[in-house]
Image (tube, rainbow, N blue to C red; front, side, top):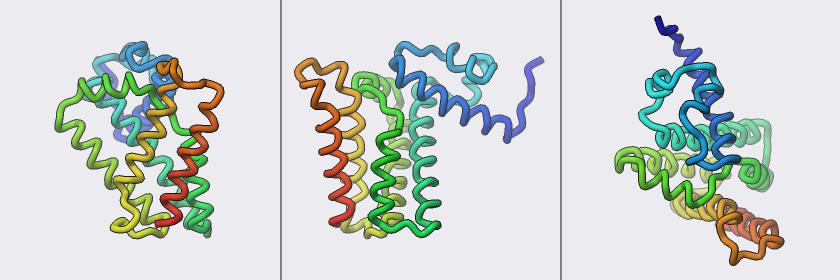
Length: 192
C-alpha cells in the first residue's frame, strides 16, 4: 500500500524536487534527466511524481516559478531589514547570477510540449512576479514596465544558456557580455 503523505510532507518533497531537480536539469540538460531520476531525489515513485505534476514540463515551469518566489522572498526580507532601492537592485543582480538557468534549446523544447493553458499560467505568474519585484524596488509598474524587466531577465537567462550551443560567440567574452546585460537591467530599474 502506498504511503499517504501529509500536505507538509508533500511541500517538503516538492521543494526538494524543485531545488535538486532544477539543478540536475541545468547541469545535464532537460532531455537528459528522466522522471525516474527526479523521483530518486525524494525516494519516491514515478506515480507519486505524476500525482504532484501533470508532466515533467509542468514540473519544470513550477520549479522556475518556485525559484523566482524564493528570490522574491530574499528581496522582501532585505527590504524589511532596511535595504535601499539601490541595494535591492544590486541584490537582485546577485540572485540573478546564482539562479539556475537552462539552455535555450531546452526552453524552446519545453515551450513546444506544454499546453497553451500551462504556458499562460506560467506567463501570468511571471508577470505578477515582476510587478511585485518592480514595486519592491520602489518603482511604479506603469513607468518601470514589469514586462520589460521580464523580457530583459529572459534574454539574460537565454544568453547564459546559449554559450555551449553558439559556436559563433567568443566564449572568452561571455562574462563581459553577461555583465553588460545585467548592468542594462540594473540601469533600467534604477532609472525608471
